[in-house]
Image 1: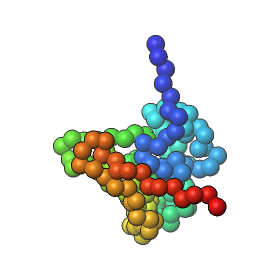
Image 2: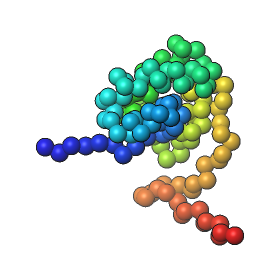
Image 3: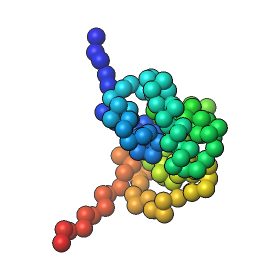
Image 4: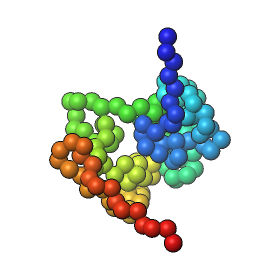
Length: 132
């Protein structure tokens, strides 16, 4: 029987970075998503409340929404973050708005990707600046 593990808990981008306490980040990446709620809910609620200035009840709702850390999609609803993810989704802006209950809506960084309407959908990579 094959065993699986995740190498990083980033189905919800930056949930680990934004809402899991520093001392638990390594464990969050090792355990399966199905252990997330039991292991990380209380710490996540505390971190969200303290870091983002939201109420405990709002942080509890977020923890229920964000854990387990799985990328889910309901095909009966429009696609886009938190229901799947589109290439054009600015997930960091969406998460800022979510974590702060709308108090912070953007990181003020534009999406610098150019997308195509045909596969592989991603445009030409942005050129790297030469090192000084």
